[in-house]
Length: 297
Image (cartoon, rainbow, N blue to C red; front, side, top):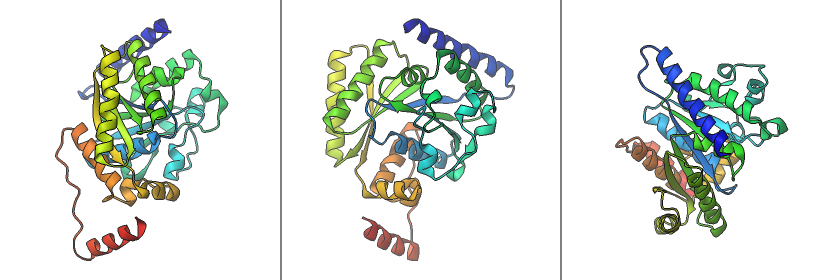
């Protein structure tokens, strides 16, 4: 396993160097962020979409890769029906650029393939070939957000180990925390070299979010000496999130003044080292917004 991972890391590093040398006039590089979780159902995909949109609103160019192979659902959450997806790229039927679609606010999406067994059973050489194609995006975007599957599958670990940063999503539930620790431990044992950050989703209060993050960090500090786990913050449990999911719209756009949206904006501002304040609605717009928020709460 370690030999394969070392080979993947070397491949990505070499390919990035080659692409950077070929792209004259482009000095910036695309930062690769893997967003993952030890347990399914903790809100990972929802976070990825809304965090990406917050980055776009802060002037960043963002592309999301739906890498939950076989169970991809970013297009479903957004209410988008792509004509082609990763299955067509991996089978050499389409080039990567041909399947990229545009989502709300100009965010770009590389759609996965939901219910496609072949994607869930990718071979190592297929993953390597896909990583080669991904390097063609170098410099075109500020951030590549990779929405991985949950758990410890080969593809989840490979995408995370090759990323610049890994954002681990959990909830305060004991099972989610246990699985998040298992994922972090596995990444550390595989010698992950980037930044590891924790996000607590569905916290009932800021205090619960803070205590949950501190609890996991204490365990990591005690048993994983080589790991420096950072807390990115928490997202408060908010009814508008499920309402937006049912509407197949990002809650950041449907409910920009909600608690969950405010938390996402704060994280994105800190992540990009920017000062960001949500524009205040005024006049009749503010009046009707307050009424709608009251009815939707």
